[in-house]
Length: 101
Image 1 (cartoon, helix red, strand yellow):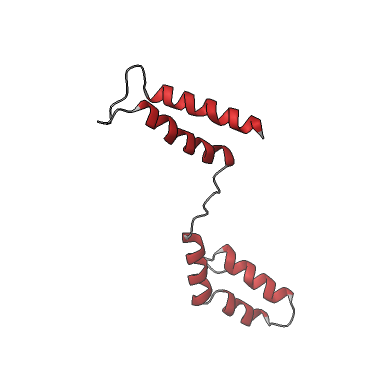
Image 2 (cartoon, rainbow, N blue to C red):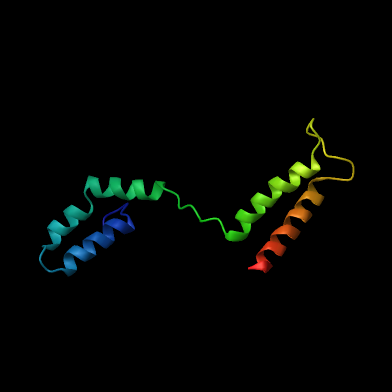
């Protein structure tokens, strides 16, 4: 493999050589060409986004509900409420909802 090679280029070269229809020199030239390297770079730049779980989606919904119960009009917490109590109440609601199913 040439210096500074990428795994994608090596894999493409291996596939082309394994097909036995493309000579090794041509396979290497194609695999390490600029378009392939550009494509590899673009693929590496994209990040995979994980799908939100059912629990986290329901938790988000219940956090909004509980937060509206806990807040005054000016944005402060009502007496006896804080973020810990909001989270505790939201988790409790989600667990209850998940058990119903």
